[in-house]
Image (tube, rainbow over all chains, first blue to last red; front, top):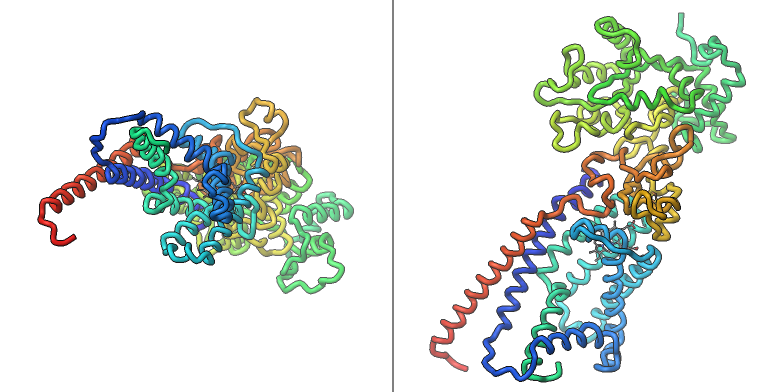
Length: 225
Length: 373
Ligand code: HEM
Ligand code: SF4
C-alpha cells in the first residue's frame, strides 16, 4: 500500500460511494423536512405564493446577507458576520471558481466554465482558513455560543476544515509529498460528503428550501417576508 | 589471467586518457554526484571527505574495476526501453557505458537466435553467477501456469526466477517490469505484475517510464559500475537522484500554472503561448521523473515542452489513473446517472416512508385520551 493506491481508492470507489450516500442522504433529509413542515392550510389565499417565495429568496439570499445594517447583523455579532461571510464567500470561490474543482464539476456534470487565476483562489483559500479558525475561537470564548456548542458543532467545523487545509497545503507543496496530501484531501472530502446529510451542514440546501417555503406561506397571507 | 579493468579495456579500444577523464566527468553528471557517496569504490566507508573530486573517484574506480556482465530479459514488453536506449542521443556516454557492461544476453539485440543464444545465456549465468546485473524489460504473467507469455516453451515466471537466482542486482526498466505497465491495465487479462512483486530476495531497482529515460538507465548502471552498490532508492524502489522531484516541480510551464493560465484545447491561443496543460489532463503534479530536468533526445525537449500533457508513465497503474486528457482532479469513478437516480429515489422513498409512519403514529396518539397536559 503506497500513496498512489490510497489516492486511487479515495478518488475512485470511495468517492463514488460517498457521493451516492450524499445523494441518498440528502434526498431522505429533504423529504423528511418537507413532510415535517407540511400542514394542510385551509385559509383562503390573500396573496401570491410564488411572489412571496421570490421576494423571500431575493431578500434572504441576495440582500440581507450583504447589507449588514438592515437587520443589524453586523452590530449583533461582528465576528460571526465577517468571518462567517468570508468563509462562505471563500468556499464558493474555491469550490466553484478554482480550476481543480471546476474540473470535478465538469467530469460530473459534463460542462465546465471559466475559472479564476490561482493566486486569487489561493488568497481566498487562505482567508477561508483564517475565517474558520476565527469561528472556532469564537465558539470557544463566546459565552452564549459555548452553551449551544456540542460535539456535532465541533465535528462540523473540523470536517470542513480538514479538506480546506489539506487542499491549501497541497497547492503549496507544504511538508508532505503532493500525492500524500492529495490522498488526504480526497479522504477528507469523502468523509465530508458522507457527513453532510447527517449534519447541519445540510443547510446549504435546506436554506434555499426553507426560504422558499416560508416565503410562500407569507406570500399567501400577503405579509412581507 | 585476471580480467582487464575497465580503463585497460577502454585504452585497448583506443580511448585516450583525456577522453577517459571526460567520460568520468560525464558519468559524474549522469549519477548526479553532487554529494559524497556513502560507500567508496572498494566497498568501505568513504573517508576522503575533504577536497572531494567526484571525477577522480570515478576514474579511480574504473581503473581498478572489471566490467559488469549484464543479462537482459524481455518478457511482456514492446522493446521500447531497448529502443530508447540504443537510439539514445548521448552516444558517447551511452555507448561507452554499454560497451563497458558486457551484454551477455539480450533477446532483441543479439544476432543469434534459438537454442544457440539460449545456450549462451546459460553459459553466462553460470560463469558470472552472483555477479551479473539482471535487466528485466516487460511484465511477468504468473497466472494460469504462465501460458500467456512463453519463450522457448518456458513461462516468463520460470525465466525470471532462473535468471534472478544468480543476479547481484536486478534492474527493472520501464513501467511494465517495474509496476506491470500496459499489460497490467484493467482488466489485466494475463495477471501481469512487476519484478518486485515476485522477487523479494534480491535488490530490485525500478526505473519506470514508458520508456525509461535512457540516461537514467545508464546513470544507474554507471553507479553500479563505479561503486558496486545501488543508488539511494525511494519507497517505490526508484533512484532518488532521478525520481526525487515531480515533473510539475521542474516544469517550464509552471509559472503559467501559478498564474492560472491554462490551455483549454490543443490548438487555442493558450496552447500556442505555451500555457499550462493541467486542464488538458497533465499528470505532472503526481509524477516523479526526471523528464523536465534531463529531458529527452539529448536534452532537446520532453512531452510537456512539446505541448502534450504528462501521462504519468513513471507511476504505478498510470493506465488506469483516469483519462489521459481528463484533468487530474476529476474523480476516477463516479456514479452512473442510473445509480445516482436510484440513490435519489431510494433516499426519497425511505424518507416518505418514515414520514408516513410518523404521521400514523401521531394520529394514533391523538386518538388516545390525553393523559395530562
Ligand atoms: C471531489 C472533490 C475534490 C477534489 C477532487 C479536489 C481536488 C483538489 C485539487 C486537485 C486541488 C489543487 C491543488 C493544486 O493546485 O495543486 C485542490 C485544492 C484545494 N481544495 Fe479541493 N478538491 C475537492 C473538494 C474540496 C472541498 C470539499 C474543499 C473544502 C471544503 C476543498 C478545498 C480546497 C482548497 C482550500 C484548496 C486550495 C486552493 C488554493 O489554495 O488555491 N476541496 N483540491
Ligand atoms: S504542464 Fe503539467 S507539469 Fe507543467 S505546470 Fe502544468 S500541470 Fe504542472
